[in-house]
Image 1: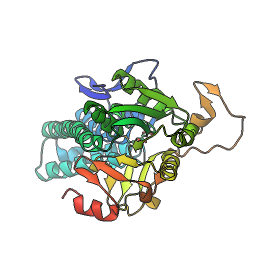
Image 2: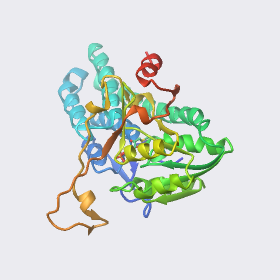
Image 3: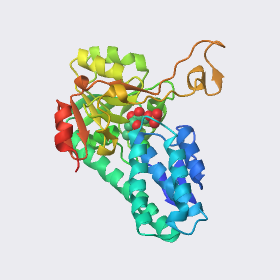
Image 4: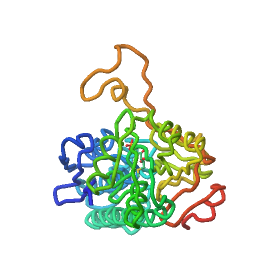
Amino acid sequence: MIPTLAWTPEGVRFIDQTKLPLEESYVVATTYEQVADVIVTMVVRGAPAIGVSAAYGIALGAIGATASTAAEFAPEFDAICARLAGTRPTAVNLFWAIDRIKRLFAGLLADQANIAEVRERILSEAHAMYDEDIAACKAMGAFGGELMPQEGGVLTHCNAGALATCGYGTALGVIRSAVEQGKHIHVFADETRPFLQGARLTAWELMADGIPTTVICDNMAASLMKAGRIQAVVVGADRIAANGDAANKIGTYNVAILAKEHGIPFYVAAPWSTIDMATPTGDSIPIEERPQIEVTHHGGRQLTPDGVGICNPAFDVTPAKYIAAIITERGLLRAPFGESLLRERPQ
Ligand code: MRU
């Protein structure tokens, strides 16, 4: 399995996703500040991977602390959590992971734990999240694989694969599982401007698995759909609101509208850590605005005239009405999502 991130005796080791597919190199973060930088610069990206990275970042912060008790460590703990929470606003898995460690820490404070216990418990919680993430991807794969056509084209946008999770992937996990079930799937990977997660990352990891893949420019999907070459769409999500509206990589909304127009089912695969029942609709999901240079330049080369207006929202929101099913590790959810999410949510 692709080693997206791993805990090592030196720190957290990340495959550098800014360098793929041309170079397979690794970055080791030894402090929580370095983990925050790695998230901001998208060395690691993808909602579930960001969440688990943040949990490991807090563990590094605890290991680096000079405090001797949980109580002494508390102000630093808050600062560490705030720094990591300030990295990327849309992926709710980040806040889910930080909140989970905060709840653990509140218990350690109440128990008057010493710093050795704090370090050990935070690290083992991060390891648990890592393992749970892979298990969730496998379960989503099993449920979602059933929805894939026996044979045909499946379009995906961005990278919701092993590289976006601790392994196996959400949307790409569904595709992997369908292939493991013996289905003959040909993946069409949107290149995903401006950061090219589809062209660089989805193509790289599916090729490593020998799954037939064709990269298309983002503006080619409609024509392929019209030509009957796409039988299903499956994407990931960064945050799903309580009514089923789903934020994902910019351009996902376009694909959903095109799929609807062509009568093609559009599926969203995401673990429950991506579902934000506290956000009522997609209108309240914060959308990250990324640096302009991601649009103005590519590979160090300037593409646009100096001074032109640039807009770079990293995500858009697909209204629930376009989604045929949400694939979770607990099963498939169908419309009306407001009701199915409420009914099926983990207690
Ligand atoms: O900006 P990115 O690359 O972090 O965006 C990633 C996506 O949009 C993914 O589709 C999403 O996080 C789901 S990953 C399983």
